Length: 397
Length: 92
Image 1 (cartoon, each protein chain N blue to C red):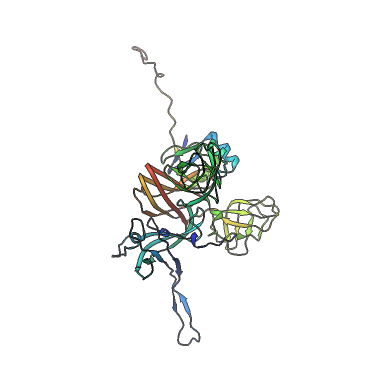
Image 2 (image 1 turned 135 degrees about the vertical axis):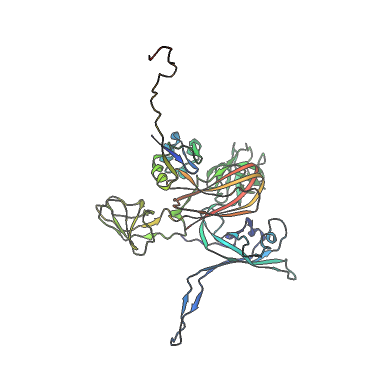
């Protein structure tokens, strides 16, 4: 189902700086495929041919000019001075900064222009253009930075049950900070370890005798955590297009025919769903052997053919890129983030291990090789006592 | 004898928790009550992981996440049994 998003849904992270905090007015990202005139003297109509290269560009306009630490000027002031200047790591998105939602990571980004604007009657603002030297890498968010969620109520219970106005996205055992909650006895404001009950309820270890209402909860991490209880499923990635199935044939290894190019690769695992009429059913995860662009076989001995349904890739074979952005880091002495993958949602293995982080802001893009399994989760290992906020996404190649 | 060794870090339910995870259909399908009962094994690179769930085993070997290592069986002791020292004059 398609969804629509408004301005609050956008996010922009540059080298660990969360630039949305600077009230960016406009954020664009543009991908172009430059073309050249290819008509000749005898041609009556103009012709253009693509050069075969693509270019990406990001612009942000109207951010408040702010010289405080971790704010816009610190993030944007540096322009590359030599060809060897280290590129920036940029992650942005337009469909909320929320686990499972799409994001775009960029490889080899440099600030091309930084423009500070002072206008009478207005606060000073800044524009920046980032030129991308390399690929645009779309993927899924695996670990979101904590955001403020509105609290509806706290219950009379020990431990008290906190009900939120929308899905809280908190992981079981994660540290949360409650602020502005009123009416409860005792007060529940402060830092607590949450136990998740449902997507909109969790408990915190406070014995509440009079319930309260209002306030917000924000999640952050102060202890080791992982998201394996709520992983990202590649078959639900909106960057994927489920391929319709025309039919399954009667054969020892049934031939699946699709009305459009399926784009699969032999040995890739696909998830077949909604296919009807076949004996036995072919629905479920299957390893494909590609015959043509619109046919492939699956290792199912089908005695009665079926029709309909879809097939969608359940793993990818060509590795990918992990992106990590650390926007806040206090008190801790170290942090190692890992992306983990699993084919069966039972055993998770390390896929990408980011370098040890000792300060914020920090950002890293890291390559993963080989097969990337269906489920992706994030694991954070902290050293010391303190708190951290981390964004992580993965782009499959 | 062959043993499984992890090439990279792994996590999986221990033997006593595996049935709960299987019944639920995966770690992400566990209810909070089930999750509280499940114990996970954390394996570091280079550690043995012979108890990896059987449904994951083949895929992990194929992917190179874990490797089968041939371990030499301890040879039967050829001399006197442990604790029995050869006495003076014996074996002559």
